[in-house]
Amino acid sequence: MPDLSLENELRTEGYAHIAGIDEAGRGPLAGPVSVAAVILPEDYSHDILTDSKKLSEKRREALYEEITQNQDIIWCSVHLGSDVIDEINILQATWRGMAEAFSGLGVAAEIALIDGKPVKNFPAEHRAVVKGDSKSLSIAAASIIAKVERDRMMVAYAEKYPDYGFEKHKGYGTKAHQAALSEHGPCAIHRMSFAPVAEAAKF
Image (cartoon, one colour):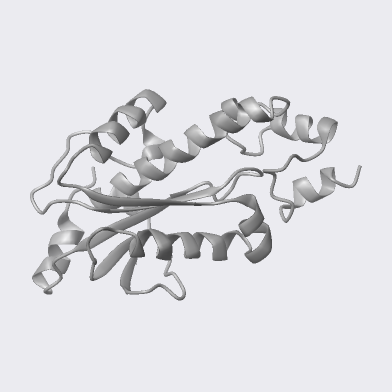
């Protein structure tokens, strides 16, 4: 289970405000990439908070409410749509979202723990942590916010674009989604720079 070991190590190095950052939605064929940054209190602990992918939707929703309504937790979320993803590519869009979420925190963090690999052009010092959402509570909290907010957006998009089943697969390239894409062609939130979408747009 994740804890604050990484955060506490940084505190011994003199850092006071440490943000955890994670994203949701790099892989889907449609919808935004969602990024969150979170600063947890020094004494924070939690029995079930972990990588959002390991939790049920119901538990993620409950944790989201718990995290975002806690007055001692500082957080910021950013969503970059398919238009931005198509313009600058998904990796650049993810990096931009990470920088914007970090910069949007109500308190100026000195350093960030980021899930995955190092981020180019990040506005502050950062440490990349592979599988960070299973190691750092700050990153795990960010993963919950990013995932829940993106899923909610995709459910809302499902009402606007009912032909694709976004409420079920959240834009990921399932067989049902690809079949709908072949039948109806892309809609406004599809990522035209992704090969399966570009292929479907030809017909």
